Amino acid sequence: MPSHPTSIWRRSPNKLRQSEIWLECFYFTSLFLAALILFLVNLGNLPLLDSNEGTVAQVAKEIYQGSDALSNWIFPTLWGEPYLAQPPLVHDLIAIAYKLGGVSEFTTRLPGALLAASSVIFVYNIGREIFIARFPALCSALVYLTCLPVVRFGRLAMSDGPLLCFELLTIWAILRSRRDLKWSLVAGIGLGLIGLTQGIVSLQILAIVGGFLWWDTPRLLTSPYFLRGLILGVTPGLGWYICQWFHYYEFQSTESFISLFLGQSSSGLELNAIEGPISAGNLDANLSLQYFLTQSLQYIVPWFMVAGAGLKLASRNVHWGWGKLVVVWIGFYLTLIFLTFNWDYYWSILLIYPALALVAGIQLDLIRNLPSYADYPRLLTYSFALMAALSAFAGLHWGIRNYIDFYLPFVCGSLAITFAATAIVLAQQEKQFIPLLFWGLFVSIFLLMVSPHWIWELKSVEPVKPIAELIRQHTPENQVIYTSMVQERSSLDFYSDRQVVVQKTDDLKDRWQHDRNVYLLLDSQAVKDLQIPLEKTIKDSQFDSLNWILAIKKY
Image (cartoon, rainbow, N blue to C red):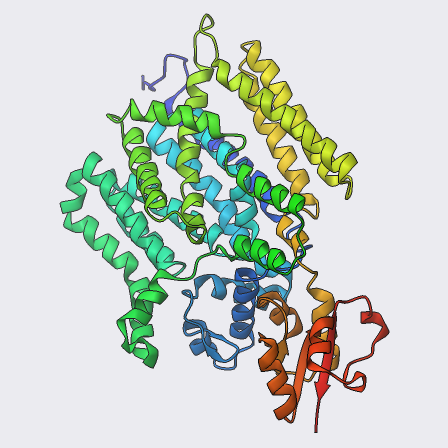
């Protein structure tokens, strides 16, 4: 009689394999749907931020509207001039979204948000490669998904979401290539995509994977097949940089080419939101302190204590592949941040979050598997109790003293309940604190994303859309507007479809006196300083509430 192999549970290996496949599909689908909810909800209901978002959107719009399709996609422009600040991959993806769904805030942020959501799956896959067990991999993915900076910055039309996705794709492919050298091609493609997003980051990731392979699997570094796969994968990215070198005359200098490779940072989100309003006198001391506290706390709450314990665990397990990977990964970025500590390199902090999520995931697995007689770490209990108290205090502050709407007290209340319940369950030595914490954080972040406060930087700057509408209604297309604003606002350029150039009062006065046709966007003080006649200003009752006046001189 034919025999069929069976397991000790009297199930055939094929059935076990099928159940494993279905279980993996269930986890993939669940994680991706949860990520889509956080990364896409309320995505297009807030205006674009100044600096990076506005600039990226304007470049993408010029690609989308360009007549010479191929040239515009490879050599993008900003107001007709070569755009040399960043490689064009993110802008090209947004231009594709414009072609499919029109120009809007939602389509501007959609490509980066989708890539950021996909990065959650890559964290899970990396966890499965290095931990083998499913639970620590799942915990790592959920920790990553409930990190507020990952969700916030991943939703914005900047390079953060794509960089996280391509970084994780590269590292996952490197891990897979240890068993199958064909994956070296995928790793090379990931490095090439990083190079087309922000060139310098590709070197950083290459240094991380090189250090890990040298420590863990040195044979790959001398494998011709592996090296050929990497080189073949990065060829498109290298080809684009070579094209830039020969296409632009400006690149005849080495400094210009290096500047493009380094790229502009994404820090405009934070610096412009802080410096501009303060210099304009629009931000009081309390709001400034509140703003800086919010900006700082989002990076460490609530996984700081868990990840810290995970780092200690990783340092004790460097004989395992996962220990080597996270030590090299985190050690490299901590060294980089220490050597170049500057807000211009805040994306270096963001790229360390997947590694921190991995060590937090393995630490949660360790706590879950502690024997019944072992006590859970008291520091965790105290930390969550403290965070519950702080969240409750913040909810009272925004609910009573500085009430704006019900969203912020509601979000803080959700966090306070989550942290307090977690602290209580931890004190009772119950393993249910892990799903309780994940679910509470997911709901809290969802509530924040539904609210109009997930881009809190907008609260410290003047709304841009009314000013843009004033310009659109009363100036001709393609007209350059000169303004007395303290700093340039790229979102104003995008919404008005006009280039708005910041100039000093003396330069504005010189233009008003000597140019035949000039359009000025001025504040009331600048109108007095320039002695603009009232008949030269636009009188429109629907814009009377604005602090800005449009002065026009035509002959």
